[in-house]
Length: 266
Image 1 (cartoon, rainbow, N blue to C red):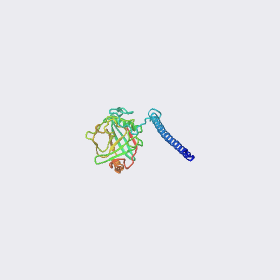
Image 2 (image 1 turned 90 degrees about the vertical axis):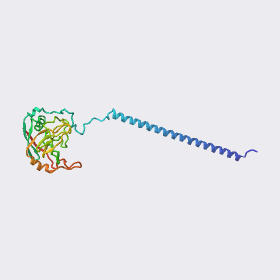
Image 3 (image 1 turned 135 degrees about the horizontal axis):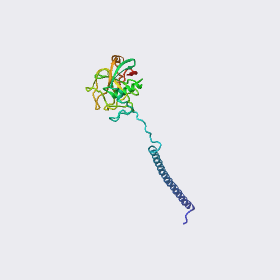
Image 4 (image 1 turned 180 degrees about the vertical axis):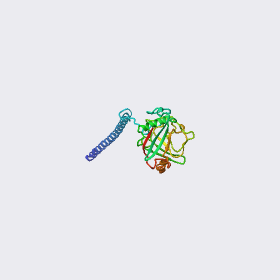
């Protein structure tokens, strides 16, 4: 018996549905493959761009115009090589192996001073030269030590913070006391620890008998003495005390701001 027309139509429609379904599946699979391919290509492109950017930055900062230019250190070079003077240090002959006398004024406190040119010729030559050149005009006394073993006022820092002059330092240590005792009135040259050739423009005045132990470089060069006015320095400056900090209540800036308002020597 021959198939009916309805049966033939149903068969054709079924074949058409199957063909459309297979076509849709083929398109869907193609789209999935394309998206996968596009994603892989995008990832590869990103990796290439990132690699190029990194390479350019490395080249820029290692060999190109982005190489950092050297800058001066924020911390002064305060410790020259042992045995080496730094800067224009006057000859010890300037001290003339004699006693020098003069006047140092701190705020309104006048101090008569005496320098021992025979005992400390290099230091006296340096400080006489500084004084005559006007170096100390307006410089401050940035540090006060007031403890059971020492009473000191330190002055002459190049910038008022205690920093050393990176372009000026000298040695050796001269006229240091063998017992480490610096009597009241002593004027001595400040320096960095363990370096005899780090003396510069800074000095300290002992306003009480002070015990300062030697370090590996020795003691401190005794430049001379305060011959009068020490009691006024104590009363008007030292008795004001130390500005306390988190690290010390006996060593810091003086409570009474102190400036060198005059310094002469002859």
